[in-house]
Image 1: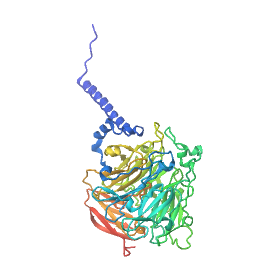
Image 2: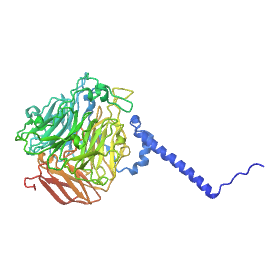
Image 3: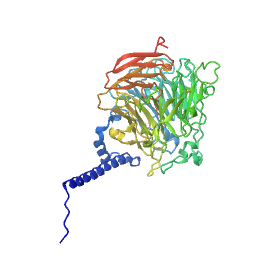
Image 4: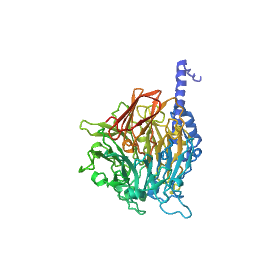
Length: 604
């Protein structure tokens, strides 16, 4: 007789069917994860617009708290960075930045874009130079560069900052170049005049980032100039221990900053008569071994004096503590180097720098600045959280990994960045511009593009939603500068991103949300505003920013500081601790806009 077939009991059939469902579900979930990661892979950047990436975006868009739209073309901004062809030169690959500022005082944020003509002349082509776009207030911009006189076609542009250095009430413009820098003084009629030589700030080295602040509290805005390396086209091959690379690829040694000697930085003290004096040696902040790209004046320890943090590329970063006192007297040293004792002497390739207080992230809030720093490939970005000690020294611990910001960035080259509450929920998020300095295998004259990062803060850590926040953020670029601002005045934070050898991006925040915001405007001299501490208390949470201290990379964010209020309709208070030590406070402030004014009668 043939063997009898065993029959499954009803319970066994249910278990069998359940097992099949679980297996199939696991396979489907695994496929989704695979395609998502595949779409995010930088080596498959050209597949950003593929069906699979679109499928993942469609499937997961509902969980994405932000949406951005590329409105560059609609805005009338036309700009392309660099020369027609890349020449495999370090100065070309590192730039350039951009800056937001209301240069004509009409209440609209204008946009300045920095450019360069190429390391060698291109026959038959003339560089358009830098460009200034005036915001017309209706979502569009007009190119007013030539009338304003700020093209600087001869300059090899790196970064830009709008600042009222002469305290006459309108914004001037400082440009860093590889070569002589420019200080364009605003004439008040829509035009500018370069007064850098007369003011004593036309430094001839390779200028990169700047930090502005009244470090000696004499009422005049000073600035710190970052310089990079003594570039020459040949370079020298760096020692093996300093060779850059990782992830099975290397850049040519001529593109390695270790191939060139570092250049010292400068501290320029404002005399109050339209000129500056170089007080670098007296202050002890030259950092001659650094290859500096960004710096910020901010009160890191809460003692009321602006300290100085410096980002260095393949050289240890520096933290200089301001010792206070009357710098104009015989006070011998204005700053002390506390880089090692504070844990900030990081030797990685540091590019962009953002500063804010992370708030009650993971139960930690101390009211002091935290630092986000972007790095080169295979080095991971850093999130330095502040921890005051009984000895009075603030220590910093890199919390990038526990907050999901480290490993995810290991295959990226990070540049510009911003602490910004992108969804207005009251928790500060992070935007990062990425773009490789590694050459494409198929064409060494082209650099590999990379996606942006949009890290959303959930109170415990961060998750990147760039691939899901719209077509514009799902693509890859060779980005460099990033500047956040509410250019259309609708109360949320938009982004402008510069790309190397490419077009600028104007990304409008189109997030559908019921959350409210409070835009804080400071009215006062630059010396009092730069480094001012702004606190907003709403819905049981205190948020803190430092005006002008979040410096990105070669870029400048908009001057207005936007705080997300979530569902709250007002803020309990807005308090400003001005850089000169005075304070202002406004109570029961409704959502929308608030202006706090600096005055001599403000409380000390």
